[in-house]
Every structure is written in structure tokens, then in C-alpha cells.
Image (cartoon, rainbow over all chains, first blue to last red; front, side, top):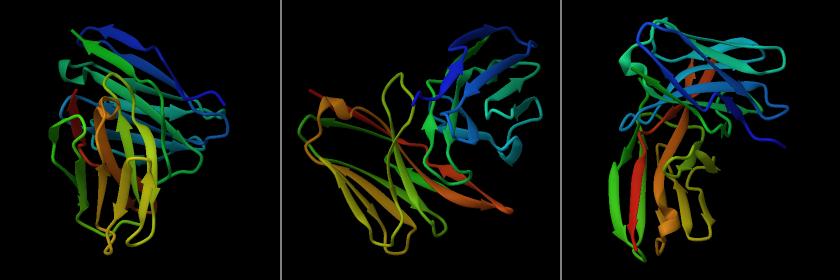
Length: 113
Length: 113
């Protein structure tokens, strides 16, 4: 099976712009979770989608949003980018929702200038 | 709220020395998962422990789940340079009618050859 794919891998934006990141889960996986990773902050949970429904949401401002499509592919959007949004954004898929083994994609490295 | 604490945050060892990282939860966990993230890479699932007092081994890695299911440890015997990376533990937390994974901040392991 192909692994989790994320596009783009690298992105440079300027403050105030918006960005959309894409994640394709492993075939058959219906759960997609998004994380923000910055040095020293570990993995900060953004949200989880299962069967096109947002199941859980982390403590991020409303500028961060996401959605999931019927084929389980997911996108996350960040509007009005701030310098502090520079991070590695990781997507993880799992067969079931909740607390199951997560398969991570390579991530999208976002730099906000 | 439920937290998962990991110690130490960083550790450097000489190749051949042993290494242990500890994960402690403020509440009982139904399971604990361990992941490894190599520098520049993404987290990769290592193992899941479910039973109280469970011990599992993967070659030089030994994983334990505490009797009270509130703590866990990962022990590496005779470290090698290939063990370099950050080790994360994660446990599920009830969030309303759903569950989501709560992650420790990770232990970064450096190995001097």
C-alpha cells in the first residue's frame, strides 16, 4: 500500500496570506488527523476528521480549518498567516478514529516571512 | 485536563550505553503508543501497549506499561547511532463522545559514536 502523502512538501508564504495543505491517507483509512510541530513543542493536535466529519479539535484559533472529502483525502487551511505559523504540518491517517495507530505523512514545511 | 509528561527532554549517550525514557499520565490510559521520529523525518509507530504491566520487546528496545496504566517506559539496550531521534509516547483521552491521542513532548536522543 502507498503511504500517506502530503502536498506540497515545502511552502513559503508571507504574513497575511492564506495557505491550503493537502493530505491523502493510506487507502482504506478513514481517519485523518493534523498536527503542528515546532521545535521544542512536540506534536500539537489540530483536528481529526473521520468519514467527512470533524471529530476532535485542538486549541488553535479559528484561522485554522480543515475538511475531509468522500475519498478520505483531507485539506487544512490557514488564513491570515502569522510568523508563528511557521512549522512542520503533519498529517496522520488511521483505519479507525480516535486512539489507534497513526501513520504519518512526510509533512509540509511552512515558512511564513 | 489530562496530560502526558515525558522525561527526560533530551539525553546524549555514548554508543553502547543504555537509554530510558519515561512517560507519565495524570489519568489512567486505555493504551499507550510509542513513536520514533528521526531527524528530518516524520513520526513512525513503534508499538502499542494495552494491558496492565505489559512488557514488549523489539530487538534492543523494551517497552513497559505500568500496573496502574498511568506510566510507561522505553528502554534501549546498547544504543547505536541508528537510535538517534525523538521518541514520543501518546495515550488516548476522552473528548466528549470521542477519543483523541494526547502526546508527550518527546525525548530527544543523541548518540555519540
